Length: 306
Image (cartoon, rainbow, N blue to C red):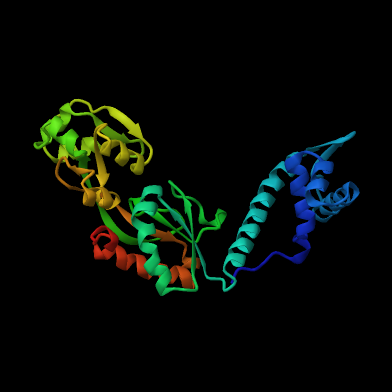
């Protein structure tokens, strides 16, 4: 079990809040107004904090204050700690039973694959609240109030465990009119058509063309930072897009996007990332079991097949 620091090194929240507010606003007066205290009360709290930790946090020059080097370093740590405490309190207030799961998601995967399926998880786990936040890259779980994250790529995330969810399959797609206009059928035909690209996967088209035996010199086209935006552009006839099939189930079902080439399995896969310390947290354990089952089923959401 991790030992907590000695209590003499744990200043009260009132002292820390006064310091953080003064550091952020650059004014004791503004901090007092924000905290609904008197100016002298805030000044006294900052002095008590400096005495308790044994360091000057501000340089006081006439009617102004300025952080010392020690104060600048300290406020960064304190601000993050206060943020975590505030987030934990908000989550508990939203669900007094303590069944909150904070999950980091990839934007399009979260909105198009995960969100439509979450109702079944919540129905099976009525005491759990799922809070979603967007993260595009691996992060340090120690610095975030996040229990788990959806990860795409290779099975590597420093400091985290990974549970495999599924492989990813991508397919060239476009609007029906675009496919007819450019005579798409053979893989080589795509070289003469406008191609849409994801900034996070700059070599996706090159990999697909190589896998399909299409020689090429270079591939250019419009750039997008989200699959959802690129799917809309492809459906509007701006070009052919190489998109994971699980992210365009609805468009393929409605026919607003149609295949423009063969499906290819990507090297990367989807994983659920979490730390070993949180592995047995009941909401996370329940979600882990559920999402593995959902991913393994390999079936589209029922609403898309109606």
